[in-house]
Image 1 (cartoon, rainbow, N blue to C red):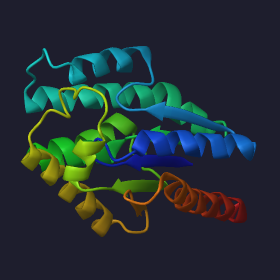
Image 2 (image 1 turned 90 degrees about the horizontal axis):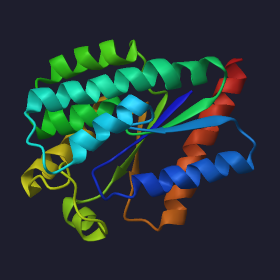
Image 3 (image 1 turned 90 degrees about the vertical axis):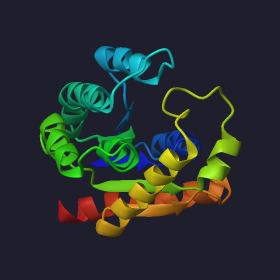
Image 4 (image 1 turned 45 degrees about the horizontal axis):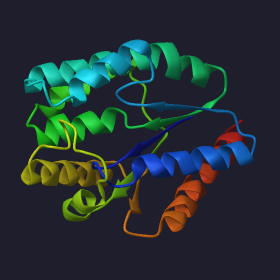
Length: 206
């Protein structure tokens, strides 16, 4: 099963991914954690380019770089892990591109979908956990110096958040919204509940 965590920068997504990893370890459930962009040698190099402020990257180039990193990660890490029976926990996946480059940057959403299908061999997450937080609160939470994507203006990040909520509205069976203003332990409990139900349901189908 492929489980993805999504949300605007500063929503606490990576923290919740770590907490989920710990829970899976405690339950002795085999899993593979990955992040986007990254997770492979090529992907990590692309990540440096995409997030470094020294580069001025066009929307088209940005979109294709994300897809290149995603394709490499999907083929060499995600699909083999899924075939071996592991749960893959992915910190960002296809919805990020729809939200950021699509809704945020203005890329054609149909084109984004076509490219995502090609990059992932039409793989779709079984469960997506969307940590929803206002842009204002997300900015206040950021500790580190903003990278190239985080440095984009307020209205851009508002469009990204709107995009995520629209994705959730269109696919409520897959995308579950988590209130990221809740204490971290309550978010983790809600996330685990969704993941546990997915695992139980998959065993029932088997």
